[in-house]
Image (spheres, rainbow, N blue to C red):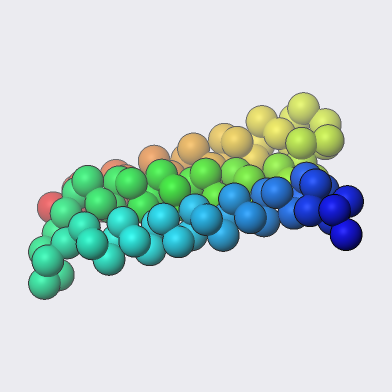
Length: 92
């Protein structure tokens, strides 16, 4: 039983769960009555980017993939995160 608890995927899953709860708490307590709060949005998007990176590296096993795939997935994440932030701040 303890072998399952020490397995890297179990640890990553626990981190993803904790980060999801942190993201929810940040978004829930961050704004009042649907007011736009750029700090809360930035924090939630950063948490989402970290979660995405963890899923890509551990559950899709990209961390053991060739270098070109690591660079491609990291680049994709940076581009998507940048576009989301750009669209958000352009709409303010």
